[in-house]
Image (cartoon, rainbow, N blue to C red):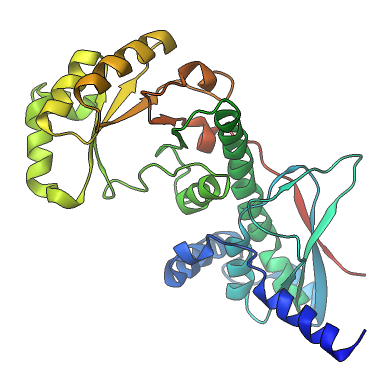
Length: 311
């Protein structure tokens, strides 16, 4: 191989972006979250296993063992950054959002981690857990997005706030990698007035929306969970930006969404409540802008990875 070829290959490798969405995550937040995971898993005093293996520099290879969409590289990287003295070399095709099809008990090498062997083993399970679950969310999300695309539905597939406590960032990130929308990230990002909010303040949707608008101003959207077309019309009339038609039968949803859009074409209509990958196509309509599913972050299968010391 000539020097020019070697130089060009080196430049090409440097331009590969293995995690295109990683810049969304503030490094201090990522490090804090990962440090908490490791604190939960690593013994508070002695790591006898780490003592047994010592701190010689060794390599471990990351293998993907089941089919799925790769996601979670920032969390994998951060685990070994916190463990310290480790470096990771990702394979060229290890790019988040890529679907890997693994058949016949084969596996695919994604990366090589180099560092003190005790550090490799301290970070192993935490790194694999985060990547396995993030990839699981991305895989299920991607399947749903592909269903929408195949039927030419122009709306957005979204998750919900039904995430695992302490693991929200990973699951929301997995939604994005899979091509879905995160929905609101937390209670502060968007106002959502659910049935409990309305009932708790006297049963008036209009009063609840106006009270919320009084403190959220122009910078936050307000969404109202509605059980009927009449409630949706009241919510929009009071100034809601989004109405959620909750637990509607598919045909009823399509009919009411059409009637609603005739009066409020610029208000977003979200369909939610008991919708799954198997049933979501029944809800597709030009008058429905968003279909959200709690199962995207509650019912996903994990993707199988392993990290093996090279010997």
